[in-house]
Length: 281
Ligand code: GUN
Image (cartoon, rainbow, N blue to C red; front, side, top):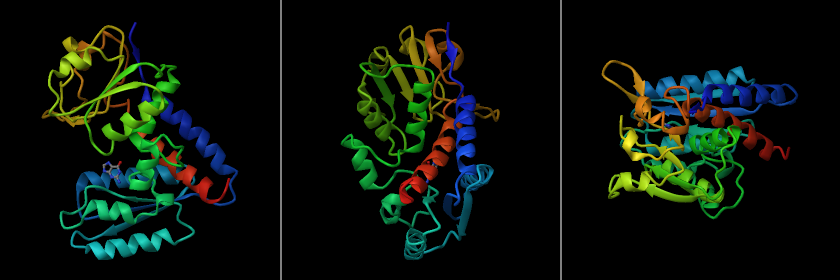
């Protein structure tokens, strides 16, 4: 029997518990988000983050900067937030306008306030298996989902498709830290389906509808679909051909309602964890 992995239920449970804990604090955790330019999808994401932070009883700062903002001025703004004791977590919404180097921006954010876990210091800690005070949001959400459904990771063959800095690469490191055997596949991988057929846990984070089909997976596989694709008819779908793959899977995430709600949930947990770390709680 295939089980659906319900990210909405898991995220709600985590956030309800978090809201209860926040009630007992004498200071509020504060998340600051910077958005540069007019990208409409980014504006929607930033508003969602603000709404969720306020619902939890956090303070929320949103700084909107014009498209033409100079790299130097953005760096100055981040440095101001780095030294502001009332700000616990800083997020610079990506993508940035082309004239701004995202790596330089990420390196400017204090590692202790790096709520995305994009800073090389934090990425490096995870890659050497050191405990970190913050983990990348989507990979952290995926691991939480597996734990919630009691899906063992240790000793399993986890196949990750997609090598992005936001999902594929950090997730692979985190699965290694959980003692999985990990294969990371990408656009230049040969014989993709030969590899995916050996997966106990298959995670696709590419952004391509129907990339993973029924003949690419073995019976009993656990499927985690990170894809978020908008079809011409306006519907959202993942990377996995859900209808045909689901009967072979032991567990599968839907899109929407699987990994998506866990990403914003992890962002809030990270904000709280940074707050606790900074206040030695
Ligand atoms: N743009 C799309 N996803 C993300 C994310 O996780 N963090 C940031 N900072 N920008 C994004």
